[in-house]
Image 1 (cartoon, one colour):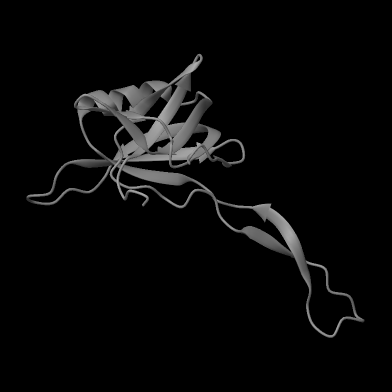
Image 2 (cartoon, one colour):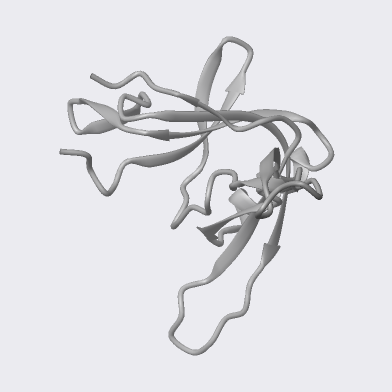
Length: 142
């Protein structure tokens, strides 16, 4: 059974991956391909071929804290190696992200902005990730 928790936004630094920030939710990872019309005047109905995928920007909601905000601000403008990993191994009382239930890896830039806040709401921010490469699914599960 696949868990509903244990999702991590990871950053590869040198040869190791580390959690970039804790995320509250995650967006669609990519999108369907566009439809490129191939219909000719002799076809009885419209025909299509698969075109480019268009996932656009990915928005990850995060809990706001000054350290996280500053960390992301310092990464702005850099192309990072990122991944969304699902799955972990337990080491004592600690959970270590390992992507055992799937990994989606890609290059991207990041930015962050503080989101609306109302009375009795936790402070939140949106981490925006702009893919610079294809989001590739890398299955390492059982």
